[in-house]
Image (cartoon, rainbow, N blue to C red; front, side, top):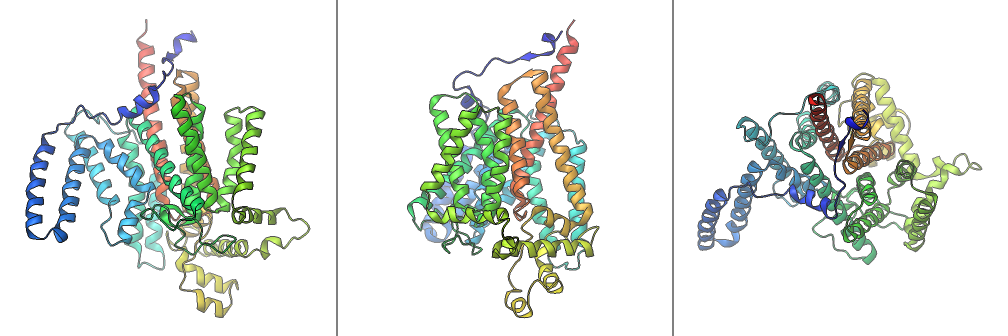
Length: 519
């Protein structure tokens, strides 16, 4: 009877992983007639632009035609919009463009992708027969979003309400687009590979920049901190495309489990080497950010990965030795920064933590956040309003002198802890909804992981799910030390998680139906 409960899937052949990845880019069902029309239109407009003023109009015409081509492509294959969106979000393309006075790309791209999904559903093209079923996890996410919206309206400072709501709505909708649009394993895996490829490429740029000492930023894809974050040598720290060292470090360590678990699967020798190199690049890039919070998260999660993957002592010791060697050959400024974590181990000096300027500053920010919560216990001071309230609370608590408050009150302050940020800005209702949502999300992910172990034999999919669980867990662990300014990255992982749950549930329904039909 036990044998009848399993669906056996043939073991992956060499190159099959790449074939499944490339299947997400299958163009055989795309009609090229709209592109032929666009090509003719493009030629006419370019000719007109050159004859009038090529320097002024040509870039806009090229951009406009390119946008139309992308729109047609996404309408016919909505997952293409998701693939582009993943690269754009993690490479921070939209902010880089707007910093140069150019229009944003994420919002129109997101709108086109969602519109394409809905249009394909209404037109019954067969690409989307039905939307995912809304369950308890989705309701918990909606509850958290509702608390965010309500908190912004009841906050004392209502000047930025609309802007804050639009930004968080956009970030959550990015996750929703992944959730709805990735309705098959091939599409999901293609998205995961694009995420890995994007992070690997950005890490390559960062590692090259740091090791070569070049001033090149590669069009701001590998820039130094724009917030004045410095390392042990008073040099600006590497901050990736987002320009914030700590948060970029958080993104990098959260991506590492996805890559590490790819090493666990069998691939062609060439792909195995590429994945190993990408793993090393992401690890080095995370170190170069100088983010101690991200580093601590990595230390916490590494044993979890080793235990879950059942890594034998010898390979584990080899990995530890390799990490020690890497630290020994890196410039001393990086080692010195991470050595500052020793303040937590100095039992002979109980004031060591408070004497460290960075840790003392974070202690003040935590105290101010807790004071905000005590004054506004239910809905906090309003989502996105921690910085606007910090200086008042710092003054009341005696955390700063009158002179320093006058000199620094114009600077932006952050909670430096995702959980302090949530509870201070959205109160106990927000923190409860936040923890409930992620708790239910993990329960669902563990449920489908256990189901695959029990009923199905698809080790590759099971590995993807496991790596995603640890990736989200890593992000949340690093959130103990880092705030959630850039929510868009966690919502991207959430979208992948919800899509994986939906795909697995549909697969299991098909399995149960097949079993019930057996005589």
